Length: 241
Image 1: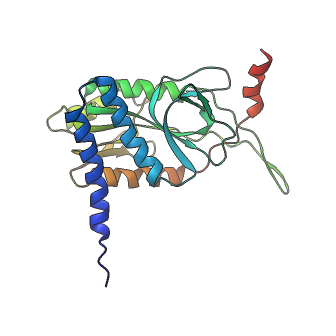
Image 2: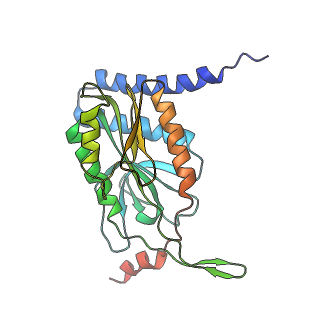
Image 3: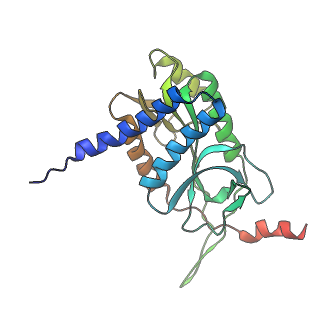
């Protein structure tokens, strides 16, 4: 027999995330500092528990044509095959080809924050992504199509009553194109997701939502496969400008 309890370990992970977000909500008055602290909670979670091939950071995303996304609170990106990530004066800049998922992090979920998250996600998905043929022992494989970039919203609580009810779902449905939010977590209330190309959302209310959402995210990333082979020369062309 062992004194360990998997149930308590997994429950404790959620409780820790929720408590940290609640403390930030109650103890920090400055909006910018509060936002930075909330983003840090989620990025720390992903960097600790996602497989080592992934990293999470607050960042801008750039494409080889020189277009930039808006600043994204949480970018989950490849660190195994990506040839470069730029760091400039404390800012992280990630090539569009390396991105797996992007999230907006807020203290609360409401219609304005859902809309804002959709705008942030759209600014990443509209970027150009390159893909080169993949060499192998017998020749080359054709260029891999860019993988879908997941988008979502992360929050501590909801301004709606019920928290994840019809008005929340109506807000999610307002953009089912480039700004679509595929899944997310409202730690105090539950988490949500959509499957593949489906427009209907599944909402899980209560439970240990931060842990359940983390497992859902890991599962989705497993099915994403690997990012395409980036054309580094397309970025290097800017050196000749």
